[in-house]
Length: 151
Image (cartoon, rainbow, N blue to C red):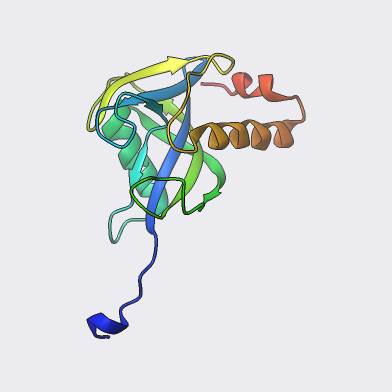
């Protein structure tokens, strides 16, 4: 296939809603876009990497945590979700273990209660709300039940 016939597609990324220490892990972004804003841990999938492996790698790089994927929250494909261009993200619900520490392009990694989240970058508030709905649908006990996931 020559360059003129090359297929152009969106970039592929991952995000993780990580349950840890009774709350959710957020990072404070160190780089644009949204530098200084809170976001879910995540990043771009590398060529030859599965989305599951990318979620684990990005989570480890940005938070120091090893994660266990609990399920797919959803696929987020709004072309306007990232100011850098069309980026599609696979978002996962995960459980974290280890010692929380910021790394990679994260200025800070913190745990927040489910009821007291700061404003989030990108469409991460939507991803978090969908994670709550996903958990709610699985056990029927409402959003507070997300807190009951054993860590």
